[in-house]
Image (tube, rainbow, N blue to C red; front, side, top):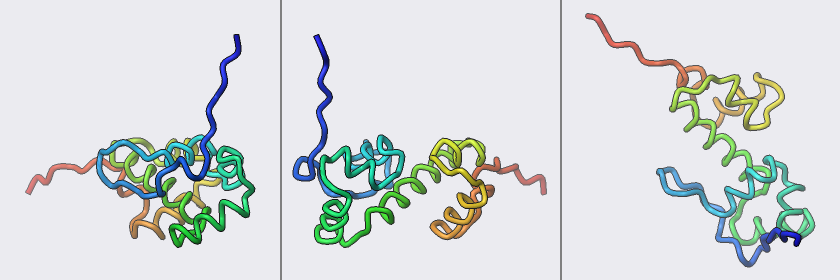
Length: 126
């Protein structure tokens, strides 16, 4: 007996929205993680061509696929760093090959370097 894996189609997936609360991730966000933040892999999971996925995002959401994948990735990084995970671990877990690339993207998106979030705050003595 073989198990079949259901694949998503564009019509069965809700719009890509980032939830900045503790709400469960959307189906799109789950697909982003499954696709390892790669646009072509996301298109493959959706059973469409990359160009079709790009047009769908542009028409429906006024976003690029790669831009949205980067937002999801950096949103996840922000929350992992707030939980106290090390910068290097977060960067590599989210598929960045260069720590400097992760730091640059993170600072551009959030306005602060990732190292500021991962540091525990010390109580003031004075």
